[in-house]
Image (cartoon, rainbow, N blue to C red; front, side, top):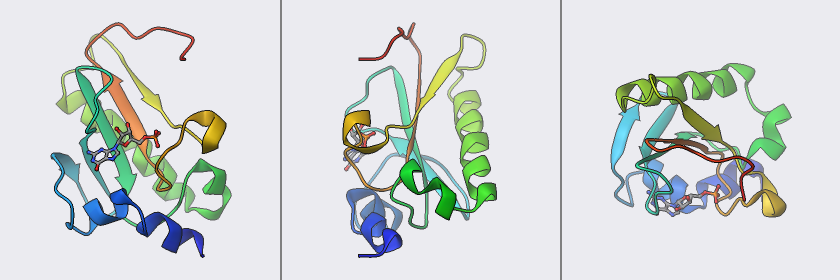
Length: 120
Ligand code: 5GP
């Protein structure tokens, strides 16, 4: 299966297509951002590209402009959620050991509480 097909064949592909509802907080031509179903912080938003890339393990196959755009959208979401003053975090889980469960690239934007380090 091609990487684009693998990522569209996930729950996030279904959200992009509007087949599964999501609490969308931002969208543009390249990506959408929506609240995580199982939030790990008062703000927990996922930023995903509309088109398929299964994860950062395929970063060298993606458009650099798209990867940069996703980071700028993460900042826009953090600003929109009122996180800028206190700080916030972006997490990208990669592969099994990284804790990735959905094979469609996504940035977690987390904030609204003091986050600890190191992560679990
Ligand atoms: P990962 O573990 O792959 O880095 O993150 C996947 C995230 O997607 C998890 O935080 C999980 O709670 C979230 N998630 C899984 N299924 C759904 C869904 O159907 N809707 C939403 N909004 N989030 C989901």
